[in-house]
Image 1 (cartoon, one colour):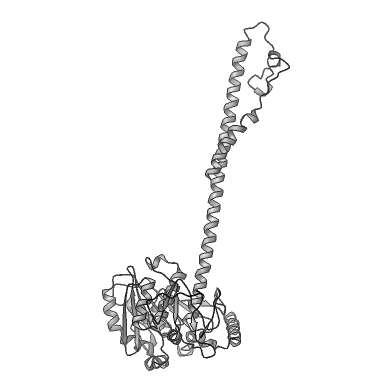
Image 2 (cartoon, rainbow, N blue to C red):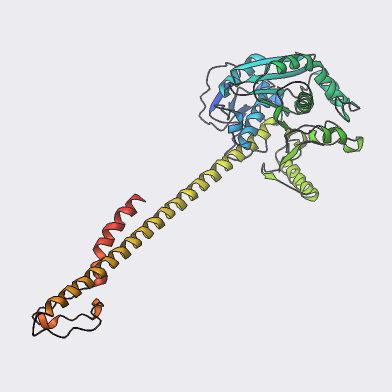
Length: 428
C-alpha cells in the first residue's frame, strides 16, 4: 500500500481525498487520526483500481469535506456541488457504512432501495431530502446489461430515452414513489455514472407527476446521455452536469444514435480547473490529459471517471471561492474604512469653517464696540474706513509700541480643529 499526497492540487494519479471529518470504512464510526490529513490509502500502482466502487472497497479510510448545518439553499453552488459529489461517492458503500458516513455530514435519516441491481439512497436532514442513485457496479450483471442496452423507447413525457436506463428506474420507481409522496421537504437529486442517468430520469418523472415535492436541482457527475432531443427539450430541470476532461462515459451513447445531453455543463480540464472551451480547445485539453496520464501509467478515459477526481477538483474550486470571498470582504472593509475617514474629514473641515466664521464675526463686533468707545475721546485716532475688515485694523497707537499684539486668524483655529479631527480619526 502507498499513500499518494494531494499537496493542495488535483492529483492526476489515483486521486486522494481529505478533509475535516475522517471516516474509517473498516471500523465505523471510530474517528481516524492521520499524520497526513491530505491523503487516502490506496493500492500501489500499477494494480490500482479505476472504478469508484473498487477504490472504496480497498480504501481503509475516506475524508469528507461537507457539513450540513442548515438548508442546502444556504450553501454556495460549489459547496452544494461538493456535497452532492460526496453523497454520490458514498452511494457505492453498503447501507450500514453509508448510513454512518452521512450522519457525520449531517443527514440523520437514510433509506436504501434495492431492486434487482437498481439501487438508490434516500438521505434526509432536518431541512432537505436527497435522492442519490448508485452508479455502475463493475461486476453487477444488471448494471452491465443496462449500460449496453442502447436502444431507445418511449419516455413517460415526450420523446425517447435509453431503454436500459429507463428499465433500471422502472424497477425502483414504485418504492421511490411512496417515499416521494410522503416527503414534505425540499427535494434534491444526484448520481454518478449510471446513477446520474437514473437520477435524471427519476427527477423528470417526479416533476411531471402528481407528486407535490418538485426537484430543487439535479447534480450529475460523469453521466451518459439519457434521451433524444425532444425528451431533453421537454424535461427541463435545473440540472448541473459535471464532466471531467477525458471521462469517457459522458461521450456515450453516441450522438449518431440520436442521443443528446441535457442540463448545464461544468467542464473540468486536465488540471482540474473549471473552463469553457470550444471544440478545438476540448481536443487540445484532451490531448494534454492523455499525455499526462501516459507519464503516470494510467488509462485516462477510465481514470477520469472516478468520483475521487471529481471531488478533488470541486474541493479546489471551493477553496478558490473562499479565498476570493475573503479578498472581497477585505476590500469592502477597506472601502468602508476609507468612507468613514472621508466623512470624518468632511465633518472636521465643516467644523473648522464654522469656527473660522465665528471668530471673524466676533472680531468685527469687537471692532465696532471699540470705535464707539474711542469716538467719545477728543484724541481718537483715525480708524480705517473698512473697520469691519479685521485684516486692516491697526491698534498700534493705543498700545505700547514695544509690545504689539498680533492676531493670526489662521492660527486661531489650528488647536480646535486638531482637537476635533483627532477623535474622529480614532473612531474611524
